[in-house]
Amino acid sequence: MFDEKWFIDHFFRGRSGSRSVLLVRLDLIGDFTLWLDSAAAYRQIYPERKLVLCANRLWAELARQQPYWDEVIEVDVARLRADHMYGLKLMLSLYWRGFEIAIQPTYSREIAVDRLVRATVALERIGQEGDTSNLHATDKRITDTWYTRLIPVGAPQSMEIQKNAEFVRVLGASNFRSSVGRLIWSPPPTAFFHSDRPYVVLSPGASWLPKAWPAEKFAYLAQELYLKQNMRIVLCGAPADHAVCERIIRATMIPIDNLAGQTSLTQLLEVIAGASLVISNDSGNIHLAAALRIPSVCIVGGGHVSRFLPYIVDSEQDCVLPRVAVHHMECFGCGWQCKYPINAGDPVPCVSNIELSAVTALCRDALIGTPPSVRTVES
Image (cartoon, rainbow, N blue to C red; front, side):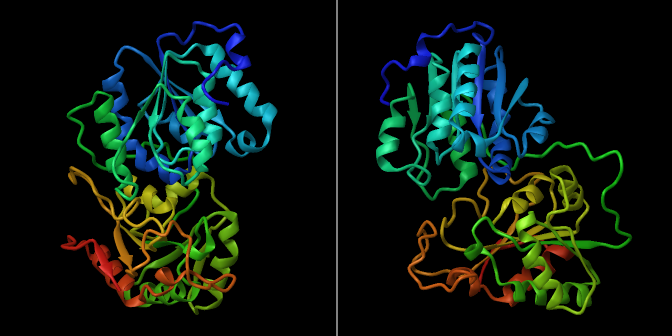
């Protein structure tokens, strides 16, 4: 497992990619969107080389619409983790391509992705030194040997956009200044969603349910926006979020559109791009809104304090940064290993204690376009 010869090293290796750079980025849509800003720098760093992106199939089609690479290889990440034969075929495919440079720009690496970088046998295999959020310490000691160069970037809780910017500066884009990437996408030929009045998107789901603000508070917020701001309310999310969206609808007496689980990625982008405001837990939708330059409010707990929100960038020009509601506690930075007892289905205290009034005030300011003197409000 350490950096000795693998059996794959003895296979015939093609030369079609000998002047190519492979970027391996397989995390979720929010992470990809946060990375878009620094992704533009790889053209500057490697101007004469073909850039190939290994992309998560969940957003690979969207990646193909971005101008930063010449080719996108689509990867089924769930199969990569569980199906050894699928992983072996992919490793052989990357090995045969003969990439000269392979780069894994994710801070929190995982073994399945590191394996792909090692399989390329590229002369340069570069990654972030990273942490052990997605790796056991023993596995990290092993996978570290699969790289020819590991770059230490920032503190564990430094903002992700800043980490990405520092990484490309070390690689060669020395004058790079971080901002918020702009997402390029093609609307569907036939509109999926139409509204004859301004609307607000609420995204009440979360990748881990205890990170989700209570449905009852989302319901109160929806009523406030509908009755006092005259906004149409649209709920969005994954299929798993449909049930919590129905709870919100049952807790109100207003008309609400529930699109959770009914949108493709392109359709979701269409809905977000037409919104006056997006309100979300700490999830990918808040980053999509920022990349589409739509005002947003995010409800943020303390598991990964400061790493993903609030945004910290070198240049705010032509940006619409998310506003953030937070309830500070002394245990911030726990990595979502909450020390408090939590009943099944309940949020962690740092999320549940965020006051409705704090979120409402941020929403009101965002809707009237008030430039925020402070983007983070503590309840």
